[in-house]
Length: 207
Ligand code: AMP
Image (tube, rainbow, N blue to C red; front, top):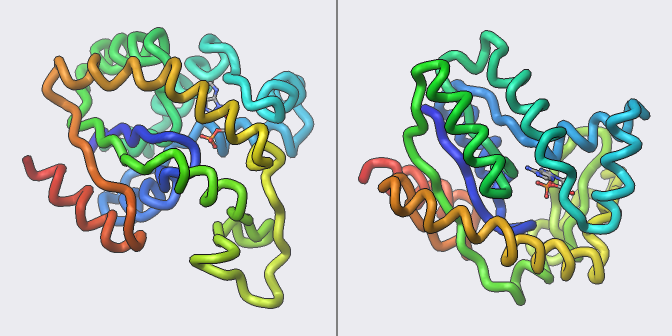
């Protein structure tokens, strides 16, 4: 299963990618998680990325393409992967096609998780991560336990979320017609419980 999950920030890509990764036994590859790990580790790449991420800007294509190229060449990605947050631009999509064609392993599907902008704002600004477990909570819909050690992502502040959503509309939305033309795109309503949305994605993968 070689799958891309497309969707705006806070559309539920990460949550669904983790579930699908478990179900299909293939790794979840999240460029956002990889960049946050580099930032925490204080690597030069992490420092460069943090400044852009905190402003709600995209990290340069060459950087994320390099990360994905390295990651999908690891043995655990041989049987497939769930890409979450990549590609985000047309050059990234082109680079991915090139990498997959070179390995003779084409994409199976591209699933877009659809959520209204109003709900995305609410989800992102009330999203919290438990820094010990990585579990993602929502202060209203999925409240954390009392002993959780919570972090509010710097790029989930309201002004930054606005910028990230604009960025998604401007650049990433151009990927939709690209994958539509290839007959790979499936759209799924992203409003509902995580379990409901997983069900919709699995149904969409059958068509
Ligand atoms: P995410 O966790 O997917 O929402 O990504 C968080 C941030 O990481 C984004 O707002 C970007 O600054 C950066 N980022 C993650 N993936 C990419 C990508 N494919 N291309 C460019 N920037 C990215």
